[in-house]
Length: 82
Image 1 (cartoon, rainbow, N blue to C red):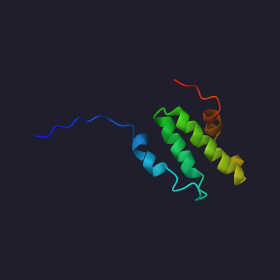
Image 2: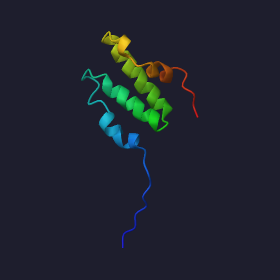
Image 3: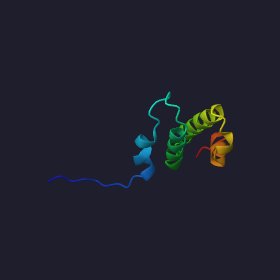
Image 4: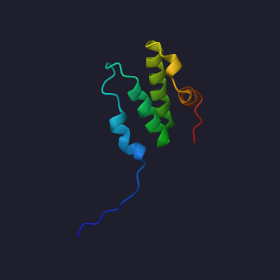
């Protein structure tokens, strides 16, 4: 008889593979924002900070800085570690 241990997993963790940008050269900014939000949701602050910075950099290059959500700046500079 098979026995399984079922443990709840945060939904953000399950979505991470789908949030990842297809490639660095595809020009998509929003994949980095989705990925950063997913990392943030599972308390991986270091990876979230890096993804937020990548998103902000790409948005700046595309001259869309006014569209960057305020959480990007709040979470990518001086992120408190727990």
